[in-house]
Length: 81
Image (cartoon, rainbow, N blue to C red; front, side):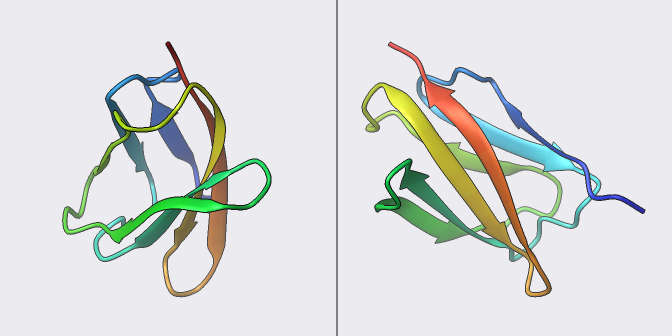
């Protein structure tokens, strides 16, 4: 089965959510700028939806890297004005 993840809203302003057919409980995550600088990171404590407060990020594109212990998943999103 192919892993399907959705990041929303996109563009985001204050909150970012990730949902999909991957178990998100205890998944580690990082938000990176497009040049690879890690600006936020954490571990999800909710098994169904990953919620990240992105209100402090500047306008622009970012990468969200997820690691479920077996593989990495990368999603691109935009912080709106």
